[in-house]
Image (cartoon, rainbow, N blue to C red; front, side, top):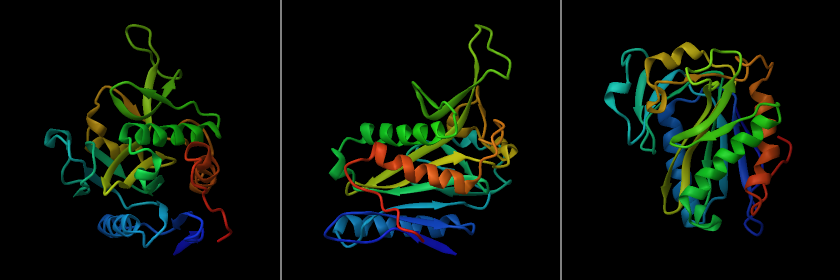
Length: 237
């Protein structure tokens, strides 16, 4: 079942929100994103954010190191054709595919990626979780005072959200993922994003009784805080 939460209105640019409540095969998602990005670039479709879950799988970005796929037979592996390295997707993880016209947002890829990170951080903050950026580590991280500190006394950190995008004619696709309640053991088949000295966590792993629906509400509420130049539609489904 697909729920469309938004409207198309050529006279007033809107962002269409789509929510899928069944697991979406990765090739199906990739085909949709590429077609929608082309349509947005040609002016025949509105921008779109697609909220979904995938069955358990690994994706390889354009910078993926084959050595980081430590268990290649565990799940299906897909070439994502996005930036970044290996990433896990699976049930309990909210994936938000972001098909937005970056040319209308300054044509600055670094700023756009930073805005996506800020969107994640604002979403996590609604659950009183402090997400943070780290130099040289794409994604969003949380400190873990409940775990042993490093030898230098620094707090342990785990990754709670990942992101990776591709642009075609200045329209983005792929996007971000927030760990809500995935099976964290599934990340052990890869070196997530090529980083081996930090762990992976989720909202539920942090002790929060948060659902995918809760995260969806937070994503929609915080979207306009970051991407304020174009309104997000919030019509009832």
